[in-house]
Image (cartoon, helix red, strand yellow):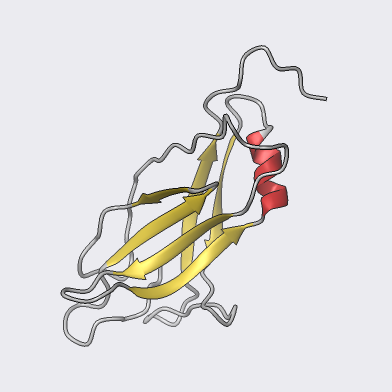
Length: 135
């Protein structure tokens, strides 16, 4: 929500998100010409080979451009310590959070409407390894 106007011509922004976690990458579809995108997409991350401590999850918000590389709007990072706890959570545990998008200088990204740019992220633990008895 509250995306900045990124395009010189057009309505504002053609956003999509890229999620990176434990060497895996997923991308949403591009939503063209909007400042408030709803992706409503689900992605699975396989953590069956993850060590006791996993790395951070990075969600990048990007602006798709015709004929050139996507422009970075900003990103959100869930630290490895938090992701390690999520990976160990009980099956069925879930939570939705709204997180501020930050630029490369760690400043809050401000949308065209002068509100802080945020993403809603819903995390859900779907499966657990059978036969393991964590400490």
